[in-house]
Structure formats: C-alpha cells, structure tokens
Amino acid sequence: MEPLLFVEHAQSCSLILVVGSAPAADAILNDAGWEPNGYTWERVVRRVVRRDLPDLAPSIAFDPEADMFVAHGPDGSALRALGTHLAALIADRGRIAQIVAEMGAPD
Image (cartoon, rainbow, N blue to C red; front, side, top):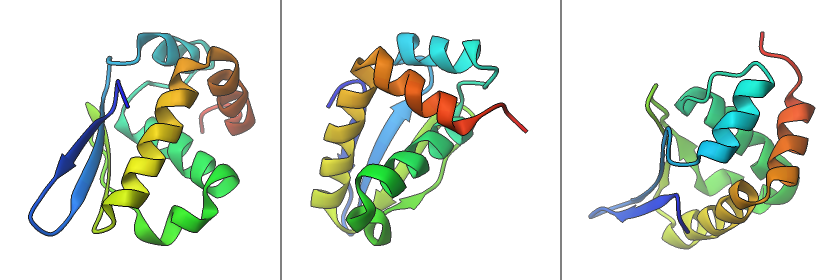
C-alpha cells in the first residue's frame, strides 16, 4: 500500500498519505498548477471514490492537513480497499495524470 500508511485505532482506522512521499504524482499535480498538499489529495481521492469506488463513499470521511492527506472511518476493510486502489493509481503516472486533467485548473 506504499506510499500510504494504514493505521488502526481503538474504534476506527486511518489512511494517510504524507505530502512528499509520492514525488512523481506530486510533480504531476505541480505541473497542472495544483499545490501537492493534503487538500489537493482529498480532491483527487474524492474524484477517485466517486468514479471507481462509489460503494465505499459512505464508509470514508476525510480530514486533510497541509502536510498530509487523511481518510478515516470505522470500516478498516473499506480503507484498505481505498489504500490498495490509491497505491496502484499513484504508481501509474498515466492514470494519475488523467485524473488531474479531469480536475481542471485550480480555482
């Protein structure tokens, strides 16, 4: 699931992407005019969930920060599925570039 981190808590789980841990994907965001921060990654992930994993949407909440993207919720299997999907996406420069292009220019 690299570069994402999966963390189990007592009552919930978190999926974390630290800004800078996916330099190739961050470069694609930069080239498109997006700041590669937790808020931008939330925008990317929301698009991915809507398009590819809509059944997971009710199980996932977001709490990004400037230096990290965080998804969390009580359903560890949903977050693991999201993490696996995102790891494959981040590793595929063409797919991440397509999603970023779909996002258009920053506001």
